Length: 73
Image (cartoon, rainbow, N blue to C red; front, side):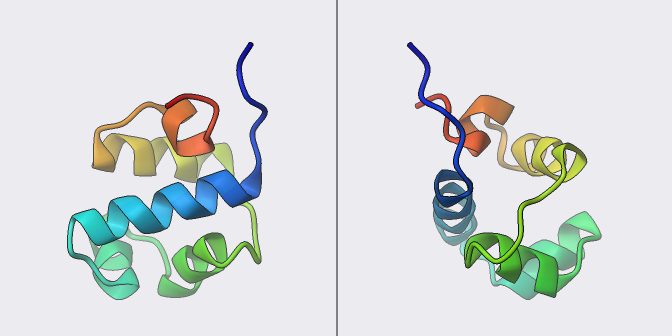
């Protein structure tokens, strides 16, 4: 059975993937055309991203949307 999506899993994965690439929130935001505040809010669990952003992040980090959402390992 697949694990349910939680914002905590998404935020943790985003932070881990960003740090693995050695990027600051500003650098990632600039690369993807997002605001630095949005990325910070997602990582700190203050806001939940729309599916459009999750897809763009998954494509950038070359992982599945399910991985980004925390439903896949």
